[in-house]
Length: 127
Image (tube, rainbow, N blue to C red; front, top):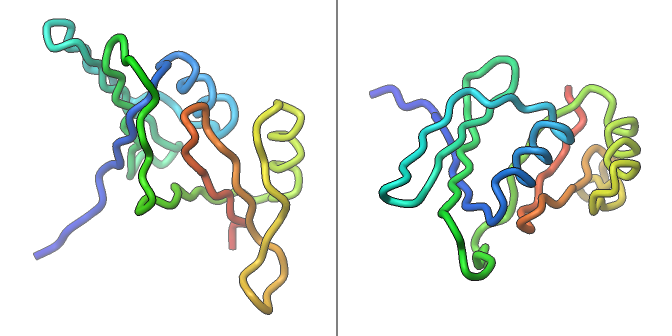
């Protein structure tokens, strides 16, 4: 059997705010959208330019309180060619950004940025 990754789903409180973050901060593009007004939710799929894997944003209409992300979830990861320029850009955009980190004994090669719902996104230096 051959399995391949298709998408990861996260629930968001403010669809427009989340779309702005993923499009402007990370350069993702909307690939498709499904509205279900009778069931009161919308699904928006985003991907990079290769389009082999998608991030699904699920927006339930009129959520009452923020979602609990949970202590088992860690992060989503993307790579970028110029790590330092990307980090500086995210800082200038006003997003919550960590210092540059490396695994023990290795030089710095990643940082984290936080999306509007509190999900951590790891930005890794491309190989």
